[in-house]
Image (cartoon, rainbow, N blue to C red; front, side, top):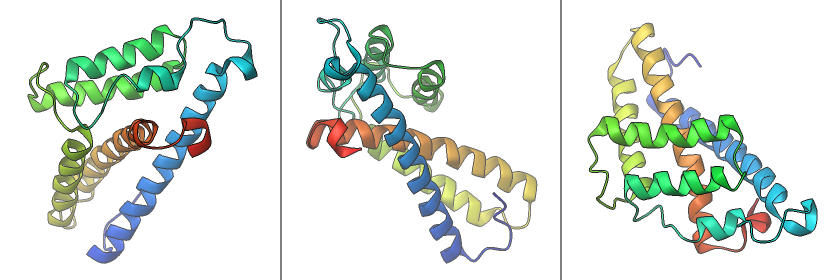
Length: 167
């Protein structure tokens, strides 16, 4: 997405549209996972935890990076993640490591990545006409938005109706 020459207000609207698109993609992805894990719709063997059961054990608004890894591992071991979804969720942990987050200290992942997105948006506005730099910054912003899309879905599972009715 070329952002050069866009007024800051339009850049904000573009970012919001991008987040909405990524959230929709995460919803569709999780809807597919939920559908695959629902015993009545897929014949999944009894005893295998559903996505909702796994996600209910964790709160992404107060979770340590290690606990987040456990969430991802449990979803994967239960067969609820494709390779691409596993990579997307593992990227959240990688970004936490790169930020220097204590692996054992609980943090609010949504707030953490919202702060990172604000920092990146500030960098975008300061990048001026440097297209290469703006491209790198947009890739970083896109990655953070993808993280937030996943986290929004986990939060919805914690605070709202069952995931299959949310998506």
